[in-house]
Image (cartoon, rainbow, N blue to C red; front, top):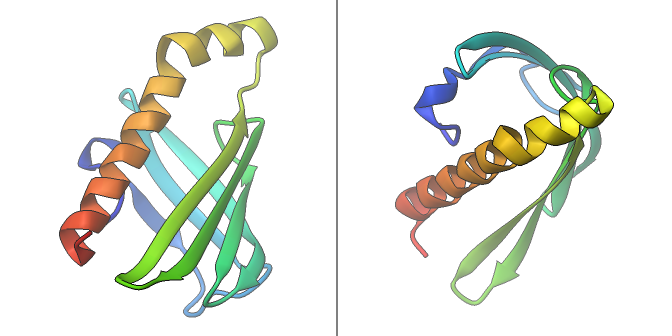
Length: 120
């Protein structure tokens, strides 16, 4: 699993095979609060990239592009995330206090797991 254990991340519904338009439903825990999250595969371009966007969940905007590029030693994985929080000034305060660090830690964990699994 590429998500940290502290998120208690669970896919609750997903198609057998992904394609553009696929919906994926998750549950996870953010600071002990159980959250439901629905994403849709907005772009599906294997083996080069895919992009998922949040349809419902904790963010007012979530767009995660996954790109894969060939390298002489294998494949380089690029994650680009664009996100925004709801609640205006309170969301900006939460971002500075918690969310930015949380997102950075989640993707640092993801990068470390990929290095463990695939080397590099």
